[in-house]
Image 1 (tube, rainbow, N blue to C red):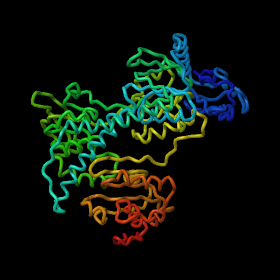
Image 2: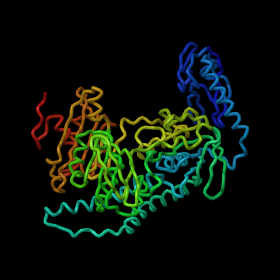
Image 3: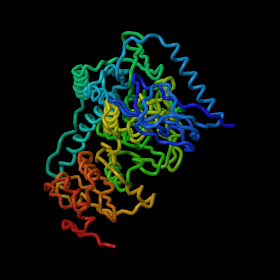
Image 4: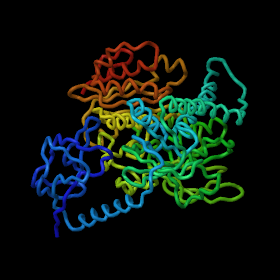
Length: 573
């Protein structure tokens, strides 16, 4: 049975008399949930009013040029009875929340929930655009996981590990060193000093921009209210015009594992560097697990890696991964692919892991690092009180403007899906802040680069060869092996490669993959080439300095073009 319901303008904050600048549906139009119905504009912002449910438009009550405000009827929609019941329940719940609210402790134009790379970028950009901004962060320092217990401290340790491994290659040049003496306390201190410089800088910039920072756990109470259990001032209530959700993600915990035992670690525990275990198991052969394996291996730990899938770094092209395997197979004791950990059992002697799959067995370890991925924190912020849709995994769906299904609430970073990377979050953050400020911004990158800071590094962007083959996408390929690079040979690191994929018709670059030292620094040129629409001749004719690792990008393009002279050009089919 169907019902006809009135669709009204939802809570849009303090905006009044917004002008209808587009009517996107007509009587008889079938719409799906969250499909835009009309577009409104004020002197500060442009926003779409989405459909609250699947249905068919019966009548349209507004036209271009009309002025509307909250609760004005814009159209009628025919929906099934179940959908109508859900909508009435949501409305009743929202009204109850509204009635139960106590006065706000203070009011702000923009509130940002989460102080990681995305959160503080959003807050700072909004402030720079003239907005009054409040930033909520649960920990005592800004920067989130990335800065405090992720990207930054891990890179400080990875650099140390790289140098420790690199000096071993100098024996071919007649230089040898005694075994290193490691002061673990000083190593931790050095890592923490790097973090402290950056977090201190963020605190100073927040103060300079007059961003109010509240340290505590925030949860929504309504579409315009958020409550914070602060670390020092008890519970405070914040009234806002716009919100940006930047609540991030957390390490996945396998329920059957004994996580209450400190010897079973996540990445945060591993970065704390409490000690150097004699033997460690890395559960998960992805980027985080392999980066931590690099650090502990250099410090003297015997490393085993177990990965459920058929290759390390799932999602990366196998030929790039082989460049890493060539090195780490010499350093680690075992790499078990297509294998899972059936159980972990703790005892005074250590942690016993039982393996099932292609490489079954049982081994005893001093410590185990569980690095099987991350899940978003969308279910931890009481988003339903604001009417924000959160899926069963904790993700929040947004449009290209980073807007959720609630027009005045935006979301960015790990919680909106896609690659969980800081550089993605910061770009989404600027879009959200600029849209709130009324600027015509959207998030529409052609690619988001990925980097594994292992030894050697691996970086890729755009179309991967694996996906091209799986989806039947035609491509031409240029590969330059670093064994033919004078610079790579000079630093005794010839295991790497540079690979470029091109459209066979237009010759424009489609994707790139680089394996070798500093691959993460080199991939930026390929990203720019893709965004600028460069083709193989553009890259091949670009004069790169010699001898460098960056010239391998130009040489890979020459391989695809057939104009290479450093190697024999491949035969054209």
